[in-house]
Structures are given as structure tokens and as C-alpha cells.
Image (tube, rainbow, N blue to C red; front, side, top):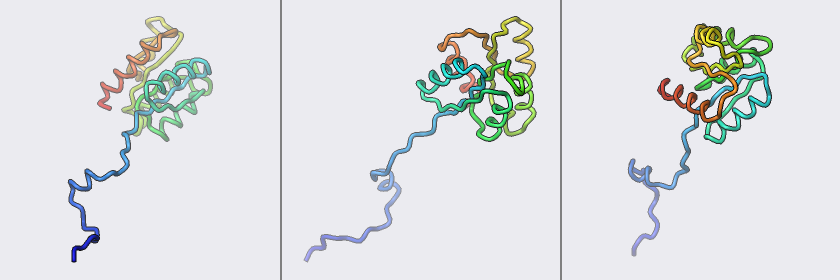
Length: 151
């Protein structure tokens, strides 16, 4: 008589690879947006989410610093002028903390004079984008920061 049922055997690597297991997509990078202006923050968040990024938001410097330390985003978009702690101080503290020192920072600001840009870069920002800016330019810079950081 022929056996119709065979007990399960240990599957080899090929069989396991070909089995219908759930496929999980890799997590997209998370980006922290810190700006006290709700409209600016919401527009940036929307554009990043449409592009497939996960986002975290903060409306003041203290929240931005706490979220960066706790969640370690891949990039931080940081406004210079914020309540509690300004963006320049947040950037300095991020680079002074071992767990956040390597996170690229895109500083954004309505202050667009050369000395403002120099202050942002001196504080540790990897790039400085004056407001107003297009979402295309912001995305180009975020993507560049992710690529240059090897993430």
C-alpha cells in the first residue's frame, strides 16, 4: 500500500527560502522634523511621508533633543529659531552626545545671510537650507545626507 501522508521533515535552506513565508519590507529611514511653525512642519512631514520616509516631529528644541536621543533618526531637519532650546544649541548638544553625534543635520532657517549659514555649519549642521525653500530642494538635500551617511 502507498503512503499518502509523510510526516514533516526538517526543510533544507532552499525549501525554507521557497516556502510562502510573509515578506517584510525593510523599514524606511526615519527623519526627525523640528520646527515650531506648525504649517512648515506639516508640509515637510507630508512631503517626506509621500516619499516613503517615516517621520518624527517636535515643536521645540527640548523635544527635538529628547526624540533624537531616544529614537535615533537617520536625519534631523532642524529649525534655528525654536522655543526652549534654539536649533544651534540643539545641534551642538547632538554632536556632543555619543549616540547622536553621527546623525546628519539639515538646518533650516528664515535667516539667510552668509553669517547665519556659517553659524549653522559651525554648530555642526551638515547642510543649511534658507526658508522659503521648495520641497524638491529639501528632498534633494535629505536624500544626499542619507547617501553621504551611508544609510
